[in-house]
Length: 180
Image 1 (spheres, rainbow, N blue to C red):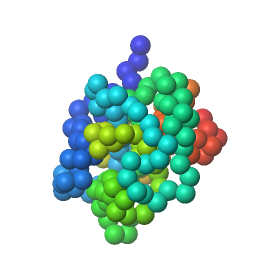
Image 2 (image 1 turned 45 degrees about the vertical axis):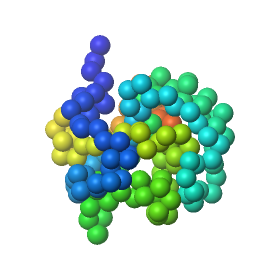
Image 3 (image 1 turned 45 degrees about the horizontal axis):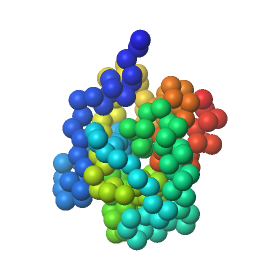
């Protein structure tokens, strides 16, 4: 059996809870890369029909819909696969993960992706891990020019292996399905 690419790339990454990162964004690198939002070991996923905090989302998912998707996904440890490309203002991983968490805490309105994770009770216990684009290229023995290219490849890999997208990549399934 071949090694799972997520294990190969992310197995040595330190994992931080959303709560830990909310208290200290300085530990996140400022390079381009990919980050995952995952369930920690022994975490019981319970969905709510609404986000656990007041955040600006136009459409919420029904808890039953999220629960169904979560339970039919063979790899329900990985909840979200996301990119962080370098921007004009810089920051990449640091900036993007900070935007995600601040959005989830209702402090910003500049991160729409992964919104299903905010309908998980006790979502501050979910963990985030990341790897820089250079490390992904080295560990996967591929050359991705951008984090967007690596994100597409990882989401397609996930779909091809598990015949489903990660829970919080729900809205993007049409975009990636065309590339499968």
